[in-house]
Length: 623
Image (cartoon, rainbow, N blue to C red; front, side, top):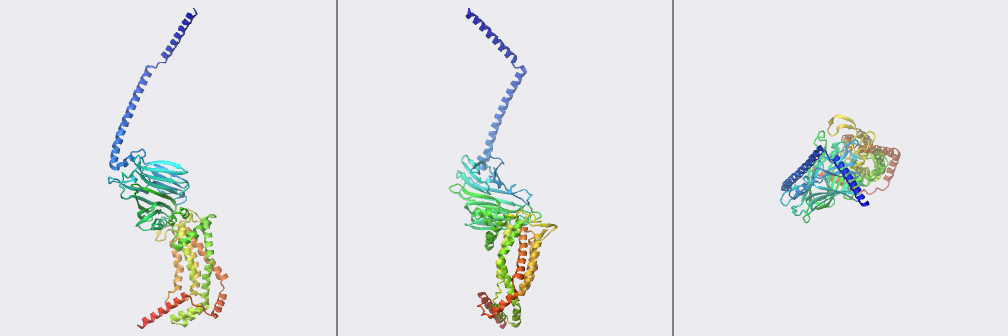
């Protein structure tokens, strides 16, 4: 009975559960409207999928036709043009000093920005050595079919990575999965120099490698300084060739073909772009074009530089390890690379360059670390002039001796009319008195290299760029205090104050010193009248400084101003407090009583020359 009861209850329970489930299903079934909406949604999804598949089919067919068309013009390099990287996009490399943007199309640097320098003035934008297609790099590739392909028109595939703090960018122009031309850029931290390797892999079957591939590098130099004419005079192409020799293309339109070139620099006033190679380019064609025909109109670019450099194949492949430098033309920075790049900075040749490299550069650099550069120029000038003061003293002492002898020299000139006899007696007097007439000239000749060295050093001193002093906003450029509504040939359309002050200083310096020189040196027959020449120079020198220095950097004018003021002060002190003319006269009279010294070789040769000239003159008179 219990079992039957259990079965009956179970049946009732299952029936109730089934009934409840049926009720729930009935009450939750979708309405007809919901069913229709769901059906429409599924039909739309089917249409979308079908359309997508159709578009893919069309795209594949289109790509296939494009690839075939590209293969007709690009050959194997059509493969690279079919990759996703075949777009006008850029990859950026950046460190603390530079920002470089490398283009997929062409694989070259499309923008080079210097982060620590402003263009034109200190409120201007950052200096950009490359922007807006003013430069390009191209390698002309000759295929087996005889077609010439230019890399600047082809797309490279970029791959960016990092290793040991370096940013590494591989740009590959592909002819297949394992066939490519690669540009490899490596940018280190806190460095203007980056590695640049050019190599190929598997292209021996694609390219005609019997002749070198031609690398072309062009750049139109943007203006970056206030005076475009002054900047243009210091913008040039510098190159190293034949194992350490260096040369440049200057101001006019020039072309040059040179062998074994190890670097080419497109140097602007204070900045430079350099391509270096470990394996020298065998024969390079270089060209420089001046773009400043009219300063009023041509105000954007200074020079157009072009370099054509052959890349030789080795076993059918290219493999060149090179470097790029985009940065300041700073002597210290370039010299630290130990690649002869310091020659790019125009510090002068011979003794002028030595003075700048071993005296001016280290001394001024040291002083500039402690004070503003305007004060540093003044302190620098004082130190140079104090170091040269013993030479100044000897020069002035010689002039004083000649001045003391002037009455006796005048007597000889009046007593002896024969030039040879007059010269003989003059030399005897010099010899008895122990006076060397050349002693006053030699110290001046020793000082001249320092003066000419300064003309090279200050225009090249990037430390002065956009550094102000008093009214001069930029010591590397002119200090205009008045803008003219017209342009004066050679002078310009402005008035700079420091050249005026420097001209006044040199006028008084020459006025002060020339009088004594004229009194000291009597006129010799057959010789130019040095008195008249010196008198003319009193006025010519200041005028020349006034004209030419008006457009030069105000730092150079400041140096010349204080140099002349210091020389005036030193000579005034020597004349009034050191040189005693009475004592000099007494010493000369004492020397006359002694046995005369043997004439110097110079005096002997001068005497012989005078005698020969007089004999020749008499011989012609007898004829």
